[in-house]
Each structure stands twice: as structure tokens, then as C-alpha cells.
Length: 352
Image 1 (cartoon, one colour):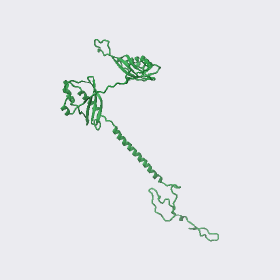
Image 2: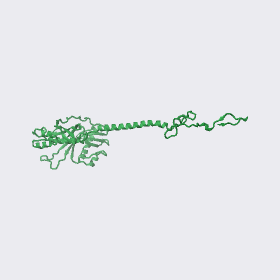
Image 3: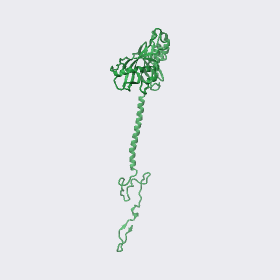
């Protein structure tokens, strides 16, 4: 305590002033420290006289509190992203596995499609070709395709040993897979000029195959009547093309690339037939109305080249003719002068 100066009459004033040492409480207080800090978060805002100091947001900073509150939203965002990635990964694996087609390996849960088709085709050639003279050979060949019990009970697989059947052609028409071990292969065969289908049941397991039952004779695919192209034709363009196309087909038949280049669009890839045939005439031409580019249908009669020594006596000077129909893309580049852009088989029925 410090007393004030004397008054004018020589007495001292009873008022006194606090020394700086009196401003701080001499008694220490216990503090609970935050790790990494020397400040007690509970008493940092309490002054020596017990009053509250200015809190955060009222002119003083609050170190660390804002950062702790921000961690939780960031953690939520991070975990959400990880869950989405995991979910999409699992669904991709599930759907890709379920959508994978069965391809012929003969193992696992996949039916060996390609192998079964080839196997059934070889069986069909043996099964559909028989004669009394080849009975033993046929039975021996069939035994390689059917179960041993079936071969022992009926080595001819249903044939009574009478008559004769010859296969002119045979190929795979399709396959219907019923499960990982069973399928039916359909063969398309030509027998004595008639088409038929043969259904061959095939069983696969552990990489092996067998014709598990007798095959079934099925009808050939039905023949339909396609609709011909429209009879309407651009007569002007048809007349122009009828004058130009014979020269093109002569060059096309010979395979003369220099001659072909004068009839084709620049950059078009058109190669000839290399002299295998000779041009005879155009028997039909259909040119639909349209713009500068047209898709036309042309029917051409070719004369086939005879091999040396193939002309028999009495047929001297007689040649073989063959009529074929082409689909062509042509372009009008010079007002009535047409150039070939593409030529191939026609999918339309030409008008006659």
C-alpha cells in the first residue's frame, strides 16, 4: 500500500493507492491442461477477480474449437464416398458375372458350345450316311459318339439295315443350351436333294461329350415369299445406266483395274472377277427415284469359262450361261454420268 502525498496543511491524506503486487492473487490455483497446451480450457476465460473474460467471437479467438467441429462433416463425406465406391464395385462384379455368356471350354459352369457343335456335326455325317455294305463301319463309328450301354443294346442306333442314305451336305444351324451340361445341336442337311434338320442331344461333363439319346428328324426351315422391290423406276436414270453398265460389267468380268477405274468413284474399292466369267447381257435393271446417289438392282447373265477339254462331242460352240443379281450403289457426278461406288449381292428381289 502506498500513501498519497501530504496535503497543503502538512497532514497526509487517508486515501491510498494499490501497489501492482496487490493486482494478482497470491494464492495459486490448480489447472487442468489440454494435451499440447498450457492453458486450462475451463479457467482460461476467468479473471483473477472471478469475472469472465471476453469469450470467443466477442473479440477474442478460440483456438482449436473450429477445427474440431469441422472434422465430423469431413469424416461423414469420406465414409460416404468409400461406401459408394464399394457398393458400385460389388454390383459391377455381380452383374458382369451374371451377364457373361457361356462359351465352350468344357469346364466349370459353361457349356462347351463350339466343341459340341463340331461334335454333333461329325456324328450327323455318320448317322445320316448308311448302306448295307457299310453296316459294320457305321456301327463302329457310331460307338465313338454314344454311351457304351446304348451302343451295346442298339449298335445301328435305330436303323434296320435295309436301304441306303447319302448325305450331300451338312452344317450346324444352331444350338439351344438347356443348362451347363445339356444342349441340343440343330444340323441342316441336304439328303437326295431335300433339306431337313436333325436335332442332336449332347451332354457335356468334365471336358467330355456324348450324344446322350437318339437324334430327331425335324422339318427344314419354311420357305417364304419375299416382297419384290417397288415396280416404280426412274426411267431417265435407268436409260442412262443401261447405256453405261455393260462396259462396266465387261471390265468387272475381266478384272482390268485400269478399265474399272474409269467407271468407279474415286477411292472406291472394286475388284473384278479375273476372267472367270464373260459378260453376256443385262436382263433386268431397277433404278428407284432419288437424288444423286441411288441403290440399284441389276440382273446380269454371265457366260462361264470352260475348262480345257471340258466340251463334249456334239456341244461344240455351246457355252454355259448363269444369271446373277447384284445390288449396286451408283453416284451421278456429271449430270447423267453415273459412277459405281459399291457392288455386291442384292438383298432385294429384282423387278422384271
